[in-house]
Image (tube, rainbow, N blue to C red; front, side, top):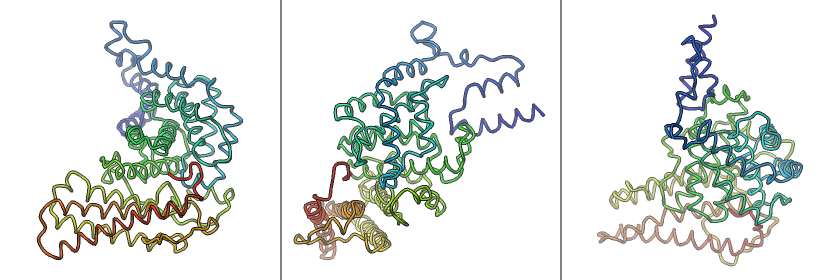
Length: 435
């Protein structure tokens, strides 16, 4: 019976090896049972530099974790009570719907690890402290109604996190994933696009390592962490969607390939996921049902259209296509964008035209509707800007010239409407509300 149980554990272990970090104690226990003698994992995995005394004991990664944990130590963390107060405000704020990064029960364990580490692994402690620090940076940028760090501390925290990122990524914990996302948002909000692109690449590694890119049960994560399966899936999928939407924004703004390819991600949005996602907000937030366009940094469907726009119009393969294929793709994307727009509820549905003499009353529009409109106009402009490539070579035929002219006119009008809208809505935008 014991042998069968050990083999079952081994079978699950090997199925999970490619997807999740497995504790060395589990591997060592199984190997000892099968071999009949104690097998030293440290001996098997000893770094070649240990032979020359060049690497601290027990391993290089552990030594790096200890060093980084010394940098992000408990002394530099904000007061624990202040963090809990900030977290409560976040949980009750609409910002949590837009940026669903923290989960209440999970964050309690994060604070315990950060402020009361016992015999926990140093890289796990480091990841928890990094999550606290990154949350402080995020809270500095968004209107939560409480200040947990100054501008000087914000810059200091950013430098600490970037130094610790390799160790956090190697540990591959949910706390580390959350810290990476918070840092990514902070860099993105402050216009540091190169840094954001690098952090985004690391965030994508968390996505794949923790199976956040799949909609199905994350068996390995639940088995290793002892977490509630549904809760773990909701948390990881929410982190995935935040990462996915920012990834597509970076694509269009930097014209660089995505870190998360649509071909390798499950992009289905199940109704039970949305229901479970909003379940926790029903009692704490002053609003009723939400359309999906009101969730996440950018509407998920719109982000998928942006992803298609990059692949179809701005990838290296797209530049090798002829004019006919280019204009066909522009037309298809324009039709897809229009279908998305018509599916948005009328009260927050964006429109292309925004006359210069139009005024905006803060009582008639919320910040999320404002951002949705700007996202739509940006996507429209990006799609039709690609028609400029038709002007770089000789054009034959009146119809082709008319197609290019009308497409460029749409791109110009979308850009012009964005500027007009921003000019009229600047009094609504507050610190951290425009991302």
